[in-house]
Structure formats: C-alpha cells, structure tokens
Image 1 (cartoon, rainbow, N blue to C red):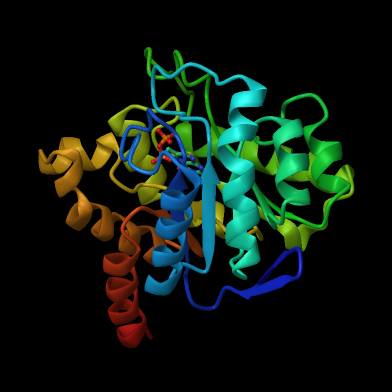
Image 2: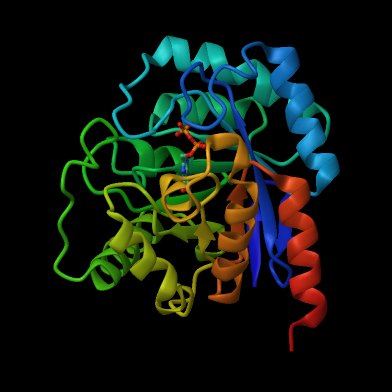
Length: 273
Ligand code: HH2
C-alpha cells in the first residue's frame, strides 16, 4: 500500500508516524508551547529527526469545548510554519476544516490535508481535488464545542465505517484519487470511553476496507482515564495505544511523542510475523 501526497510517495508497509505540531494557544495537550514560527519549526524538525515521516501542522484546537478560530488568525498561525518546514524538505500536513486554509497551505508547500470534518465544509472537496495533496478523512459526531455531550450511536463501529466509506466515495467522485485517501475513526471526537474502546478493538473492520487507516490516540482522555496520568505522563499509555492500533491494521499514527513511538514500533516490527 502506497500513499500519494504531492511529490511524496509513502510506502506504508512500515507504520508511518505523523508528528503533531500544534501552533495553538489552547490545544489540550501542548497548547501555547510553540507560539511563534521559530519554535514551531524547531519542534517540527526535531520530530522529523526523531522519525516522523509527516508533520501535521494545526492552528485551530479541536479539543472538546473549543471554539472555532477566525480564518485570518488560523492562516497567520500556520502558513509561515508550513512554508519553513516544507523549505527544509519536510512532508507537511495541514490540520484544518477550512477550504481557504487548505488552499493556502498547499500553496505554501503542504502535501496533505488532515480534516477532522472529512471535507464536509462547502468547497473543501473541490479544493483538495484541485490539488495533488493527500487527504485524511476523519469521523466526528457533532462539533468540538458540543461533541462530548452524550454522543449516541446505533452501532459505533458500523456507523463510523459507513460514514467514512461514504466520504471516501464522495472524495473519489470529486476527483481525488484513491491513492491519496486516508481514513480515521476520530478517537475522542463525539465518543465516550466505551465507543473509543470498541473502535480500537474493531479497527480491523475499517482497515480491511481498502484505504490506509490513521489512528490518533496520543495523550487523549481515553489514555488519561485508563492510566490516571496527567498530560505530561501519558507517553507510555499513548505508545501502548499506538501499538494496539497498528496491530489492528492502522498504517499511520498521529502522535506527540515521536521518539518513544518510533522505538516501540521498531520493536513491534522486528517481531512481527
Ligand atoms: N486529533 C486531534 C486533532 N486532529 N486529526 C486526525 N486525523 N485524527 C485525530 O485523532 C486528531 C486530529 C486532537 O489532538 P491534538 O492536536 O493534540 O489537540 P488539539 O485539537 O487540542 O490541537
């Protein structure tokens, strides 16, 4: 399986680590730590040196309860960071829901669009179709502001799978080649702990659908609930979750702690049949 992202071709035989570069004052895990372009770029390059094949730059927090960010502010936060990282030869993904940000990010050198809204905003499908960027289509029930207020599913695994395959069909119909598409169940996005565990346990039902699957569990509240750890201490739990996801068929993992995840995945790979 190969992912086409701009000029990059990613072989996914080995799990691909996407390192998180949040340029936000309010992200749940690392908000405000990389407030200016220089520190964000430095952090991204460090993650790349540690083994991240993709860097996911985000300027709008999507943590539960967060508010949307204005277009100008989001552009201001991410574009210079993307341009600088791409200038260093890094493969950059833009974490956004806004078509205008997608377009500007691709112009600045991004080769992937990571959309927690699965290209449902007006114009988003056409914007990605007009580029050669890869796209991650993520499932979210509701919006970040209210998504954790009692989310309900008939069958969370089947419902999420159905939604994602519908969005993949829409993307292909809009002209986005299958080789550019990644699917993500969206852990923590309108899901209870029971929903998240069911999705992880049955991730293989999604990974068998013919698209590479991305899992984002890093430092999330699911890990906190299980381990009882503060944000800084969730690395071990997060690494365990990444291993389980990969074991269940995920080809990409979106993580904050690249070095630890890389080592754990290297050990997993060495012993895999
Ligand atoms: N999770 C977050 C943000 N973007 N994108 C994908 N595809 N999958 C995810 O699970 C995912 C995502 C939330 O994590 P983080 O970036 O650490 O926090 P915040 O949204 O507060 O910036």
